[in-house]
Each structure stands twice: as structure tokens, then as C-alpha cells.
Amino acid sequence: ELNLDKFFPPENVFAVDDTLPYCKPETEAFQKVFDAVGIKRAEECVMIEDSMKNIRTAKSLGMYTVLVVGRGRLSKKDNDEVHSSKERLANASELTKPGDAPNSADRSVDICIEDCGQLKDALPGLFNKAHLSDSCRSK
Image (cartoon, rainbow, N blue to C red):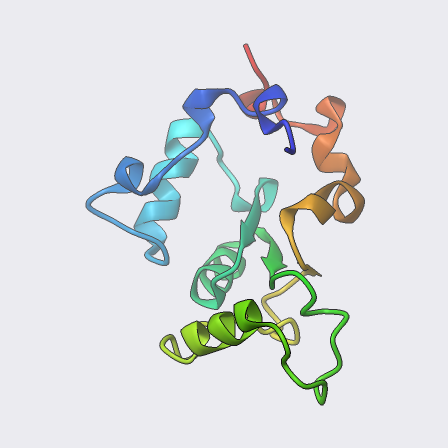
């Protein structure tokens, strides 16, 4: 949907297996990715995440952070009644991870979006190849 493959070659896309024996939010997991891509300064990176634990670690390393909270969560008023079973399920799921549920007011959050489809509007420079570092461009 976002066509990120135009901006990030497959060798610069990482999964859990790529950082073992470490895992987010451990700083060593982030460092493995930085080293693999050739990043010298975390400030050159953007973390797009739905976990507050991972957002907080990314921010502590100096990364720019984008919190993804889920569709309808920014536009919904706090006192609105939860109607959809999908949203009730999401809320119940967040109860199992205290301190990790999305919190757009947390000081570690630079930008908050509902879903990744909003990235182009939230961070237009991210989608402009001229703004990407050489280590992130296709060779």
C-alpha cells in the first residue's frame, strides 16, 4: 500500500529474527539494525511503532518517533461509547500490556497517527528520495 520498497531495499527491512538474540525494546536490537544499515547517529532514523515500550526506547536513543494508535482513535472523544466489537477487542487486548498501550500524550511521541496510510501526510520528507540517506537508498 505504501510502496516502501521504492525507498528501502529488502536488505534494509528487518524482522524479529534479524536482531536475535535481542528483541525490541532492548537497545541492542536497535543497535544491530543501525550497524547493518550503517547508521552512525540514531537521530537519522524514524521509528514507526504502536508499542509505547519501543517508542520510549527509540526516543531515548535519539530517534524521531511516530506512534500508530489505530483507526478512529484520534478522532474519537474520550467519553464516546465504544460501539464496534473490533474496537472493544483492541481495548481488551491493551489491558494485557500495562504501560504499553498507545499514549499520544507521552513525551516520547513526536507524531501520532491512526494508521500507516497517514505517513505520507505526517512525514512527507520520508517519501522524498532526495531526503533519504545513502544507506537507505536502493543501490
